[in-house]
Length: 136
Image (spheres, rainbow, N blue to C red):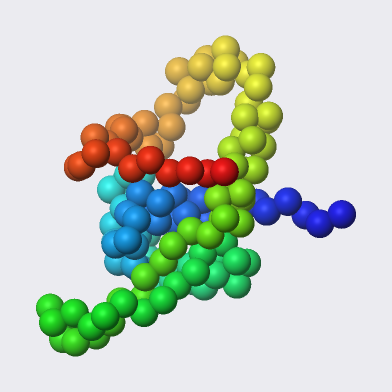
């Protein structure tokens, strides 16, 4: 029986950043999106290594955009999440839901005693109309 697609934590962040960015998803914007939303410093090398791994798994596809004058004529490598990548996000969310089911009260007590390192995280207001993404 084939394994269901799954994504590790950072892979999930990269996939979700691409979904948020839509047509403007390339290495630097993906990095910025992750850092803005999580307040987690991320190296560009880690982003590109993860993008290469996700592409090999079939979770994303990339293509070269047209050269941009503000980049000295260099082209951007743009990314889009593929159906298999969306399936990996759905499966990862289902696993997290299954593992946390029934722990809500216990988790609330735990987090009250031991605040998370990133407890100052806030849900960022979208700059524009929220993107609707079909994960089916």
